[in-house]
Image (cartoon, rainbow, N blue to C red; front, side, top):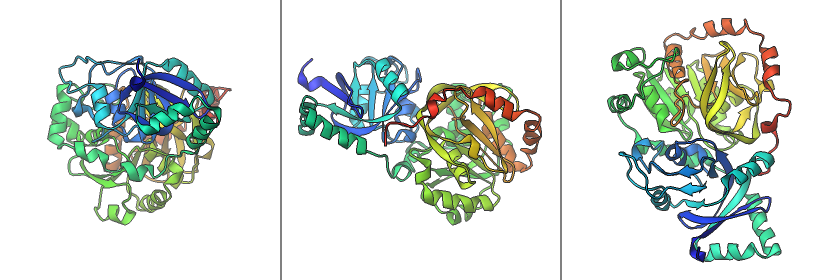
Length: 441
């Protein structure tokens, strides 16, 4: 290995991993996280929720089916840096249009391969997500950083820079980025039907008939409030026959209400939900309007904050396609796709709201149903691209809520039949490992 191919990861705790360069070269700082998905690396790279983060894939081989633009969740790559154990240089897939390495170079994303990603993941699980620096290439800044690794005083100066990093202006930086891959409703359904990616109903069966899938949503308009939306959220709404108008995260309540929408979709997005002070203020006005609301991920957190709940940073978060959540009304457990580092604190859920889903690993909030307003939200991704399709019926629930605002009464009645307190106590692990304080600032 010559000097030009060497690359390093310097964690905020001082630990160094040496590997090989992947993608672009340079010297960047970000928040180091890991995701456990065995596939879906294309969606991960283009998911706006990863803005500002250095993402480690725990699955050992990444890139084996290449890069497929049709699977992009937005128009560009949003990760700050990318780490894999082994990168496939010869992908095999009939839809492939390039290699992972070439894509990262094109997107100016600094990457690292050839390290023990299991060891790195263990560090992040035990210590919590932390800031880090990726150093790659022969540029002046990279060479200076490499030299500093061997000198304790200069290395400490690097560590001070790393620890000071904070993800800022996250929503403003990514809103609207999915518009580059938007398609019409007919195109969406036709392409999804070709790969059996059609709406999944609550009984687990698939709705292959386009007219039947779109019947209840026809004539209804939904505003997708884009805080860094994944493209598949819009696709799932379109597949239900809804007309979707995307509004940027900077839109005001007055601008949204002027469109006279039948429903409001709060999207996923990056960063600390509490940083979005203006969005929360506008959301309070929208809540008062009585418009039916469905929130996903960051949208779920923002709705909870607007209703008076509190959020917290998890120790290492939930990122991957295998997170189990339990529906408290039915007792059924679903395997879900997730990507978040913050959660709504269960004990702060206000009056007029009920916990609907919990994570069976650590008991954290995975969903809230509101009884005082026509709204519900989930922390996981029911659009699940890539991931399980089992919870996509929640988009049907949203359509039903739009058409009949008393739709959730049935849920409320069923929820009251279960001993939620007893269940909650039994599902939270005594160690509460994922609710600790993270190392990063």
